[in-house]
Length: 279
Image (cartoon, rainbow, N blue to C red; front, side, top):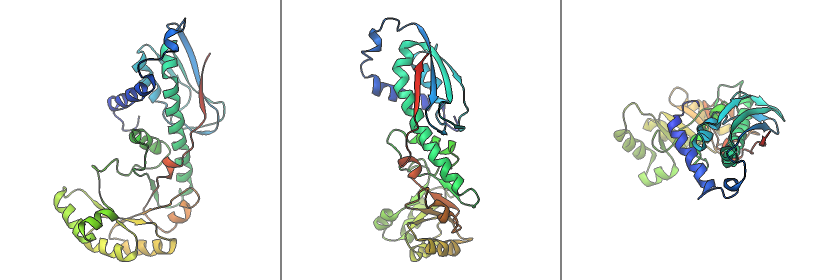
């Protein structure tokens, strides 16, 4: 999986499985034939962009290391209704205990990748790049941000620890944009950039004067965005944010911003219909 440590991902998947298993699967554990080897086919039931395929062998190996997975489609590919995605073989106990968690992940991540791909394609002829946000499902940030990259967008910061980003509430606490930038600049490595969120052109000018490396242009109308891009040219990288959707992302990109950040890829994504049937 792109940029993800299998050891870290395995720990996340184990937590998901434990959430579902609780103190044990009281149905499957009592079935006759539960130790017999079976094969199941995982299929897409609607068109979309596939994401999460590499999770299948990791997840099933936690339940039983003898399980085998044969991918039948490529990660990040567009698939159609009734497309076989993978064939999995192993003891029925492992397949049935992992089925729901496996499908939940494939459906969720593929839904995120599908919407992301649409948004990326909408701005493909502009210079703007689409980036994600921290508006993710608790416990799923790493995987949802992975799905965003499968869809073709770029990750913004992963958390509070990997980017200095001064937002409106930080500014209120510090007293001013200048005070916030100066305080953070003194504390972080000189190689670390600082991004400042601004709501209007006056705040933008303050951020530029304070030495912001990036400016987040928050909820500005198109005319103001264009002016902001002009003011920041050659001084700071520009990022448009706030209310970005598939419907309006193109016109935002045409203002000339460098980046567009949107949480819609995650919180507006619809789960893709995928099923798994023992054959």
